[in-house]
Length: 234
Image (cartoon, rainbow, N blue to C red; front, side, top):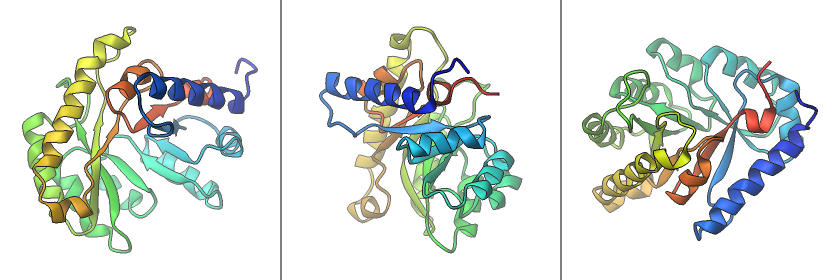
């Protein structure tokens, strides 16, 4: 760590998000911060909570479940944003407010089958740059995934999650964020009104420390930030 407190880091990130919202003409608070706690210790997560953070995201199933057990009395919303193997679905069911990384119908179906106590809020992951190294559905696969997911009674489709290529120039990823937003609009417009009431399909999980200002300008509703909040992973 560089000596900067988690609370100070968190406040700086929130101010940067607010500035981006203002520049984009958006309502303050319309882009919410997900503190990505992958690889961070419990003390830092508690420090972020004490500073007002209520949404946290994890990438790895076993690490996530262990942390949730250790922090079970902390009233926060947990989000899962990592790639999901079929044999890990049972481990995740019922523990997360949101699952951001539904990338194929088999995973959606597994969550639907097992989420019997309460409906599971999910995002469909879109491989917006068609990178073979990343998870997510192609555009054609995504349309099929959305069509089938809205038919499951135990899922609630919130929107899309995207991870554009990593780059030092935030403007270079603007076309990917724009594409995701336009596709989200198309998919939502195609839903009949009764399905829209159950599956909002109006949220975009996109943007990280390097590019969230551009993501906010392009409509992001959830921003995923890790080390800028917690400092380097230990």
